[in-house]
Structure formats: C-alpha cells, structure tokens
Length: 512
Image 1 (spheres, rainbow, N blue to C red):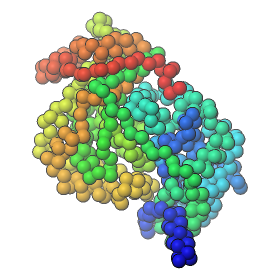
Image 2 (cartoon, one colour):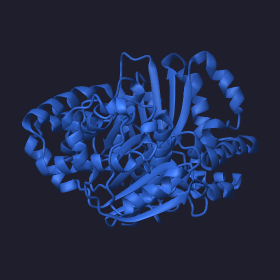
Image 3 (tube, one colour):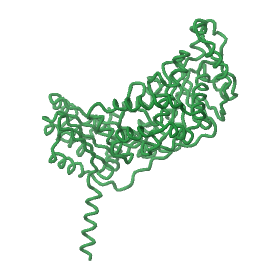
Image 4 (cartoon, rainbow, N blue to C red):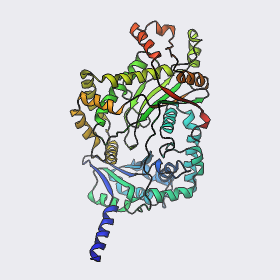
C-alpha cells in the first residue's frame, strides 16, 4: 500500500511540474518563435522594492550567461538575424526569442543560458537599475503627459493594492533594489511552477521535448506568489489633478473597475459597444466625432475595456499584457489650457480654464446616452461587421499569433481571437445594450488630469463646484460651426457631474 501511495505521489509531482505548453505549428514558416511566460509581474514585487520584477527580468535579458557577456551574445547572434527581449506587466513577465529555423540549434544554448544560468553581473544590473531609476524619477513625468496621466490613473484606481505602483516601480522602491535582491527574486518568482512555454513555427517534436526538459529544470517555487488585487470603488467622481510646469495641455484619463475580462463570453458584447463609443484611433467612434472632429479640441479621444499597452505608439492592441484585475477607461488626449488658448487667440484673453472640464462633460454625457438609449440596429450591424474584420489584423506575425494564444491560455481560453469572432457573430444588439447597462456606469469614476500649474487651481474649483464650463472657440472656428453644435455646447457646459473629491498633487510628489 505504501509503495502504491509513493508511486501516486511521484506521478503527481511529475504532472505538477510538467511544462505548461502552448503550441502553434506553422509548417511553412522559416521562423521559430519561443516565449517563456512567468506568472509573476509587478504584483510579485516585495514590499519596499517596487520595480524588482522588471529589474530582474531586464537584467536577465540585457545581461549575459555564465559563458557569454551581453556584448558577446550580440556579436554571435547578429549573423543569424536572431533577436530576443522581455516584457513585464502587472501579472506576467514574457521572454521572447526569434530565429530562423536553420540557426535554431546555434541560438538555443544562448536561450538556455539566459533562462537557466543568467550572468547577473554588477555592470549589467547597474545599467538596468540606472535606466529604471531615471524612468521613474524623470522620464515618466517629462516625456509624455498622456502616458503620465495613464500611470497616475492606475495609481488612483489601485491605491493601497499590489496593482498600484508602476511596473517600473517607484523612486524609493528602485533605489532599494540590490543585485542580491535580483538573484533572490529570480529564484523566488521565476520557476517551473508559474511558467508557460510558447512555441511557434516549423519545429521538431525532439526540440520541443528538449525545451520542456530544460526549462522544467527551473525550480518549483517554494512559496505562492501574491494574488492580483482588484481596483477600489470610487464614491462619486474623485479627481486628482497633477500640476506641472509648462504642460502643453491637459491630459485626461478616467475610469472605474470593470468586473469582466476576456474570460467571460459577454466581453464580446462590450467590445462592440466600446468600438462604437471610442475604438482606439478610429474616427467613426462617438467620442472622436464629438470632441476632435466636430470641435477640433485635440488629437483623439478613445475608450477601453481592458489595458491597452502604449496607446500613443500602437495602432493595434499588443498581446503579452493579460490582466485579471480589469477596469474601463476613457482617454482624452491633451486638450488646451487657458494659458495656451489665451496665448494664441486674443479674443479668449478673459477665460479662466481651458477645455478639460468641457471635454470631460462631453465624454461622460456621450457614455450616459449610449447606456440609456443603447445602439441602433444599423449602428450595431456596421460596428460588428467592422470589428470582426478589424480583429483579423491583430495577429499578422507568428510572434503575435503566439502571443495571443498565450494570452488566451492566461484567461482560460484556447484561442481568444477565433472564439471572439464566433461570439461576435452570434451577438445581438439586445445583448450589447444589456451588457452596457450591466457593466457600464458614470456615477462613480476616478479621473486623473495632468495639466499646467496655471490651470490646476481654477480647474479644481470648476470641477468641485460644478461650475458651467462654456466651450472656448477662436472667432475663426466659431464662424464655421453649425448651430446644432453650438446648441449642443450649451447643453454640455452645464451637464451635471457628481464630483465628490478634488485633489491637487505636485508632479514632483508622484511615484515616490
């Protein structure tokens, strides 16, 4: 009996440590793509060392192995047209390797060395840490107010949770990280028990077996990693205004917790609703039409039902950033401040605030209308047709195809892109309208606004006191606007927003 019990334990241990594999066989492809995903991400950063997972992953990727320095690796792989890198998000870290199949076996010792025997040299660590420190101390505040407002919204949404800090960490957390911390975190957060292997291309069964065996030699984690915590619920509309010197406009991000992800079939209905309200970079959406196209207020206005990585640079959503803690958001790309408008148009010399309050009212009013009235059958059919076609562009390379398959695995699905098309095909306008009423609302939201110091106090007063926010046009623009638009402006400028809290923060005090 003891022997049988022992055999069961051995078999159980074997199954538990067996590599979790996502395969994409592409017999006609000359490219081999390998992805090693670890379920850790920034939520696994130890308290007081925010950013350690990102530093650890990048020290592995940008460092060397026990046999080669990073410079030697670059020289070796250049003739093979091979490449590799890592991405880290809230809940996952993903190492990606690509090479022509003819050079796979020459490249593989480097893959194996980086994953199993990273060099962890002081010079590599110091370089990575320095770049990370510079990002959290300077770059995030100065390079793009749009990305800055997105990070400050997440800080507000997830305050006092393990989702709050940026993936890159914060100033004190990065400072606290040492090379010994990196070595320990590699042992404690990068193991075979939280690993998924992805592989795409024309690979052999023998190579896959070798890959699974080698990566399976990573240790089983001794302690469970932290569970991702959920966004907190706002009470009314809570606003944080980040005041900085010489901001070119007011960058606005607003959102609220969303109790649905790709794992839920109803997500397809929300995809249609979101596409009509504010599909990323699409001029047919309502937010884009109302704010940018009709009123020339900014570059673009979009809405999201999940995290969208680097929206300023990417026209299409990128795989590799799956999240279980979800939220809805609206992105109003910077609108002008009073300072900027007065500097351009003498006729606006008496205004006290710029366009941020009006744009917020317009966006929230449009969302209220779609929730209350629903989509028409015509708008629904056009949007669904577009979306089913558009999503075919998401995965145009083997690397992206594999990435989406691994995201699917994270959400408990087999092939999210394929399954979504089938779900979209059978979704009705009634399904969409019901999903909006179930999951969307505008009464309880967080709003983050990064703006010029001159705008912060008057904008805070306007929001806090629910003051009218008339739209400010130059004489030239006002002269070509239709009466319908001007009439709608009057309705928007007094649209009630239940703002319960407004806080002004100094830019220098964020991400400490």
